[in-house]
Image 1 (spheres, rainbow, N blue to C red):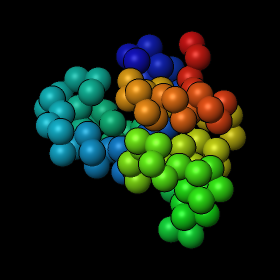
Image 2 (tube, one colour):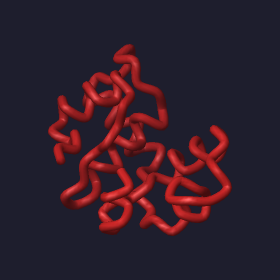
Image 3 (cartoon, rainbow, N blue to C red):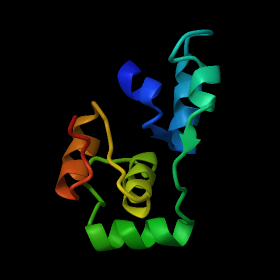
Image 4 (spheres, rainbow, N blue to C red):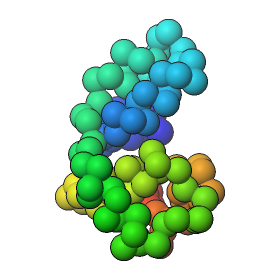
Length: 103
């Protein structure tokens, strides 16, 4: 992760940034709010885009949350984007859509 951060190859979804802030990030270093705040923001889909995607992709009951769906759709909206996650359900859906990051 630090290598990717150093290469400037990471965009951060604003909702994920909010979740990270709420989790209690370290005050300094490569995983601090200041460092994450310097990353390029990922695309943010509209409410209607997310609703349409949930229905089209049949995501209800698949174990992903609303922020996860935003992340999936964001990666689909961005050119050459992929998702790096350790969350099992998000991982499965990212793989399903060909959006899983492969180093």
